[in-house]
Image (tube, rainbow, N blue to C red; front, side):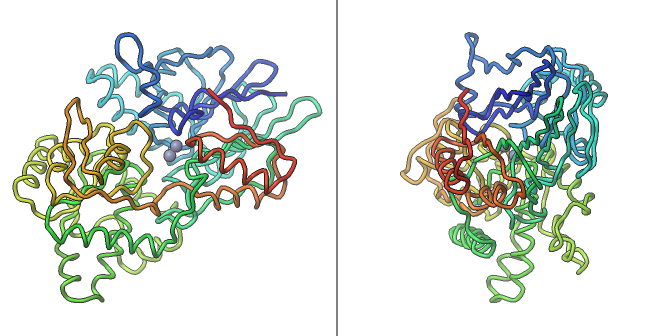
Length: 467
Ligand SMILES: [Zn+2]
Ligand SMILES: [Zn+2]
């Protein structure tokens, strides 16, 4: 009755874009994301640019459903609109609020500074955006017999997995697209609940071969890494996505500071006088949205607010907005060697303001880089992670930068479900899928997860699609 075609997130984790196509010809897309790292390089065209044009036939594509507003899930939307897509873009209410901000930023950074062009695009986007509440079935325009529903995914604010209810003639099927699933004990947001039933599942596998540390160990690891880093002075650089990861980190740091009051005087003083700098205008905007949408927070976070705490805005927090301030801050930290925590995007160091900090501070042995998120193959982040501990170098903005900084990787911090969570997602469905497609992961992760699903559900058809 239908087929599924993948236009991304099959050879790695980026470029998510899946097409659900009825045999009658109409189809919908789930996500339309940007390629990054090695996957972007694989698309470099003759003129040396990454080819981001939507290279598949759009005839019959009636709608786009957006799971969440990370750039690797939404970054190709401008190209989709440029290619003439006029259908509705469905998203949860929070995602619909955040999406214009994310795309405006992406356009400004990577495509054009032409204000008029950006405004035209934003007008189109807002006209086509349809905000839908969580847990509510809606008919997908132009797709007869297809209803959809967004469910909490617990990955970032507004994130959802998509359930499709497909009725064609006498047949009825449930198809679930996981989007990115959150880890159950990640800060701030509630954990995803499994769908009641599912016939075919398209699931991410970012950490399909790994188990995360527990919540407590994770916070301890972050605290220790930072305390160790600060012993010799110098900055602690934390590359982080502006949306999701930055707010999670602030939430955890506020908690570490809060708890430090009951530790030794020295430790309490260290934490209470430490500067925490968020250098990303986009992150600050998102933080404001996170603050205003407390109804989407989990019980623990809301409890903290009730006790008079401000999990996302505390005294030592400095936000850097303008480019001038940013340059000043980089120079100041480089010349003074003063201890401070800097959180800046992009999360995989493939652009953004973090690059300027890295260029200035990687050659300084007092600097520490703390990775808390996934680093895709081919990104500078992955190279720093891999070659940094051996005293290697990294290419940044066409320059070779020596790494004398200490490099730490905290595995436990992840906005993604681990292997156990991905298995539980399926285990807790009342009606189990007959078919599972594994996407959005490195090869080893996909293979490992596939083996586990086959063990869990003998007879299930597990497919690892190729591009
Ligand atoms: Zn994501
Ligand atoms: Zn993703």
